[in-house]
Length: 112
Image 1: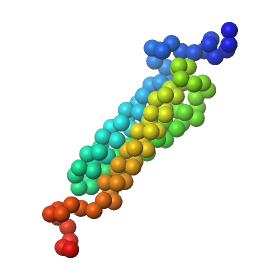
Image 2 (image 1 turned 120 degrees about the vertical axis):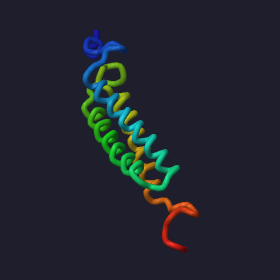
Image 3 (image 1 turned 90 degrees about the vertical axis):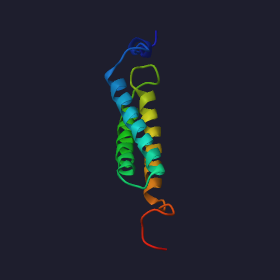
């Protein structure tokens, strides 16, 4: 029997790494939602929240992936880590787009 089979976690076992990876993915998901909302409104707190929480999701997700010593199903949280990185990058992109876009016509701002 291979050694990886001895240490593999059950698919439903909630390990510490899986908890951290899931929390990072949920933070990154909330950041992506905030980034999407920031695109609908003038840039404000939502875009800053998307940027900050997106960075947290990317960093924590990357740390989980870097520390994983096995693939999916080993209990290392690698799937959640990759999800956190992808969602965090999406949130950073949306937050940055909301920050740099021009105000809509009719919005308060300097005259043209």
